[in-house]
Amino acid sequence: MSFSFSKRLLLAAIVSSVPALAQLSVGVKAGVPLNDAFINSGQGTIPLVGTTTRFLIGPEVDLNLPFHLGVEADALYRRYKLNGSGVNEWDFPILLKYRFTGVPVLHPFVDIGPIFNHVNNVGRATDDQSIPGVVFGAGIDLHALFLHIKPEFRYIHWMDQNYNYLSLNSNLASNQNQAQILIGITF
Image 1 (tube, rainbow, N blue to C red):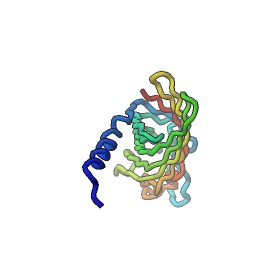
Image 2 (cartoon, rainbow, N blue to C red):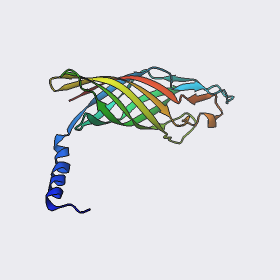
Image 3 (tube, helix red, strand yellow):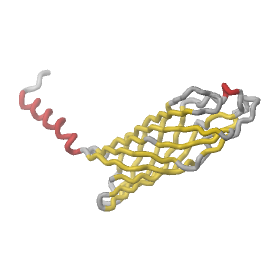
């Protein structure tokens, strides 16, 4: 099947117009975890005490596309304490978003996508670590002039228990199922 010149020209016009229809917005996202990042694995012999910092924060980038679709990328930071030592974690979700039609200033949405994290300074474990996971979310996009305010609930399932806690012979492991409440503000 061959395309005529006019069909190729029409296809090129459609493909080249998609970026013009997209809107890029940047901002900040912050929130709180609803459950602890640590669980008792029952496998170790050394008690390792961990506490979860009660907030996450970082930059957010949204690309709104035609047909109620969008792509969001975040870099969310939080800190933990393990036996008094600080642990730094960065989460990097990349989400495909679908916005439902609603009233002009209120758009419910759902999102799904992969998430990757980077963890370092894990007590006696000197290796930086990363694991993948999957994110499911739902929220509302409130439009106020040029500002977008987006409260959201997210569920994260990590593909593995991370952080070398088990290799430290401790009874502490990362929680593979985590929930968060977040709010994003973009311009």
